[in-house]
Amino acid sequence: MRRPLRKRKCKHCQTFFTPDPRSARRQRYCPAPACRQASKAASQRRWRHQAANRDYFTGPTHVERVRAWRQAHTGYWRRQAARPAPALQDHLTPQPISNQSLNDTFVTPALQDHFFLQPAVFVGLLAHLTGFTLQEDIATTARRLQQLGRDILASAPPNSGGMPNAQTAPLSGAPAASPPAVQLGRSALGP
Image (cartoon, rainbow, N blue to C red; front, side, top):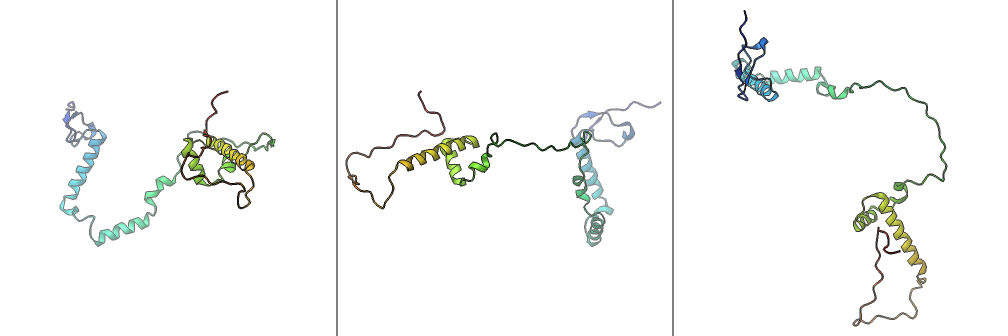
């Protein structure tokens, strides 16, 4: 009759565990992943300290052995990444592509195509001044500023190299009148 397995203390984590019956005489580490890693490291350390294995990874003969193995197994470390993962579902049968005509009145130009032909500095400046980061908000603000600029330029007298009846402001005295404040990116207050 077989004796029941006794619990053993793990050499790594110091907890008690029941060894696997197939290797009960030799098992000194519990099956926890950290302990298995410690067991592997200890096993490799014991193997390297044997007299026959001390110089296994050094010397010109072993360098040549490794070089020959790498040449025979080209791309060994890359094979796993090259294989595609198996699909979790069956492949779908492709459906025929049907051409649909879109009415041009319903299609608006893409925002990136229409607006972002402007220099990046201008777009960044608008985003900084308004605090907006969405493309639609920046585009709306830019259109509003563009219209304001057109209105100002349309009402200005043509520049003919000098302005008749222009008066020079005195250096001292009352400050010049400031233009009205413009609020960017928000709706106007009031009715």
